[in-house]
Every structure is written in structure tokens, then in C-alpha cells.
Image (cartoon, rainbow, N blue to C red):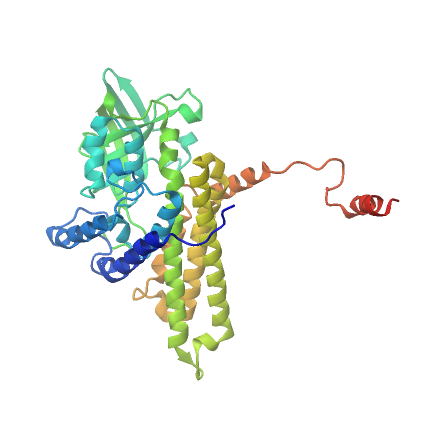
Length: 425
């Protein structure tokens, strides 16, 4: 029997190094260039960032989700989860550690499904962190529901021709290539209706209609593209994976990614809690520090409980993925952490705002950005409600209907059965 909450000392030393590195160095990038994470680097930025990446590589912490043959460490989900908890403290940290979404997920599926030519053209520079990529899946009329997708890819001789519209194709304006999900066989069942394509960003016919910004982004900094694909022609070897296997390809990038997002959220929520604790001991009112006020104590206690419960659930989910090596077996738990991710961050950040008072809603503190991030997380990779339904359906598979008219926990017949068993009458 194995039951342990400790971390291997050698790996804990790596986590400690990463925490100090993120807090003392990487976090400074958040202050200087908060909106540049996905952009091509300027010479000034590269002179600072490349040495940081080198330090990460020297510590054996670069792109740890990938195997050694791709320059990573091939860490399992538990180690990745613990590392991502640290990376959640900084907006820039995932890029410095070679784990920036959507590039990480895109790298994983190219590594799994790409041909040797595709890996050489797209994966190598992506792993080096020299370029960014785009995952172009959702559509204006359909959101994330693949059953409503209409973007088509039609075979024409040795080429595929793509037509349709995609929305919220994040980072398309800076991407070197896009991974496009398109219907290739509209008559097939949903799981075999679509295929994935690797499309260079400079391919004729790709029209970025506009780049939508999130609330609070500076003018002109929108990064979520509405794209119209007009007779975009790509060769047959642009297909990523098998024809009709877009679902299988997509699941490779989503399962583990949700664990990583959740643990980064743990790290971010813990930051909000830490700032709340500091404020509670620093600010005085009515002759006492805020920490002496019962309402503030409730905010702190509830936040601590939420963060710790969430953290343990995410780590347990990572453990299950590692143990079973089958995302389908852990589908309920993956959906559960996806449901909790935005709620925990929103709740803790909102309490932190209350404890900080008016300062908390200004752009001089990060809490409103956290709340916006929480709302975005409630929509990314499918809305929260979809995942709640998944949890319920998966949960019900473990139960069965009661026999007869009464619940199996109905006390009168149980009492009679106990009397017969123990008293003989």
C-alpha cells in the first residue's frame, strides 16, 4: 500500500529553485511587458529572455511535458502538476519554461501525430520557443460544439481546400502556423467527421477579419481572431493524423492540459490568498488590524479551504491519469477540476478585493485581472455547464436504480431486517 503526500527531495529542490526563479526574475517580465507574452520577441526582450530560458534548461525544467527525444524531461502528470503550480504565479513563466498554451498542446499533438517532415518544419522551432502557433477550432455560430461546425476541407487532386470561418483563434496574428479543424466527411458520425490540418500562416486565403480583445486589454492588443478561410489550399501532407481523426487528436492536447491549467490556477489563487493575508495584517481600521475582524477572518478561512481542497483534487486527478494512462477513465475528475478552476479563482480573488477595499478594484492591484481570467476559464475548452453535465453523467454510471418502490436507504425495512438478523425475530 502506498499513501504519501510528500515530494521526492530531489524534485522538491527543483521546485524550490523554480519558485525562487519565478518570483525574483520571471515575474519582472510581467511588470515590464504584461501584454507581450505571445508576441515575437524584440531584440531587447530576447537579450533578457534567452538567458532565462538557458537557466531553465540547465536545471532540467524546460518543456517537461515532452519526452527526452524532444528535448523535455518526460515528467508524469504529478510532477507536471506541481511544477505548473509554481508557473501559475507569473504570466510569463510558462513561456520561459517552454510550456505556454496553446503552443504546448500544439507541440504535443504534432509530436504524437505529425510526420517526420511536419515535426522538422513546425515542432522544432516551436519547442525552441522561437515561434508561436494557433489552434483554430471554434466557430462563430457554433462556439465549441463540433456538431455544429461548418468549416469544410474538400479534397481536390493532391490538395485540400479549406473554406469557412473560425472564431477565437487565439494568437493567430502572431502565429507562424495554424492547426485548423475542418469537416472532411459530413456524412460520417460526429467522432469521424472532422480532420486536423497544419496550415502555414502565410497561406493565401487566410483573412483575419478582426482581433477581438478581452475586457481591459489595451486598444489594438486583441489576440483572439475571427478568421475567414477562403479557398485556402494546402497539400495532402498537411493532414495532421488520420483523416477523420480530429477528435482523437484534440483529446491528446486537452486532457493533461486541463490538469496543468488547474494547477496554475492553484498557484494564482494562492497568490491572491497571500496578498489577502498580508493586507489583513497591514491595514488598520477602528483601532485594530483587519485580521482581527471576524468578517476578514472568514474570508481568509474560506479561501484557504477552497484552495487546499482544489489543490488536492487536482493532484489526485493527476495521480489517476498517471496510474491508468487512460484519460477516459479519469474523465469525471478532469471535468470536475475544469468546473472548479474558474470558481476557486473567482471566489478567492473577489474576497481579496473586499479585504483591499477600493484599492482592490484599481489597476494598481491584480485582482480584477484574476476575476476576468476566472470568467475566461469558465468558457475556455468548453463552458462550465458542459463539464458539469459530464461529471453528472459519469457519476451516475456508478449507481443503479433501487429495487421496488422505496429507496434502498428507507429505514423501516432496514430496521426490520436488522431486527431479524440480530434478534432473531
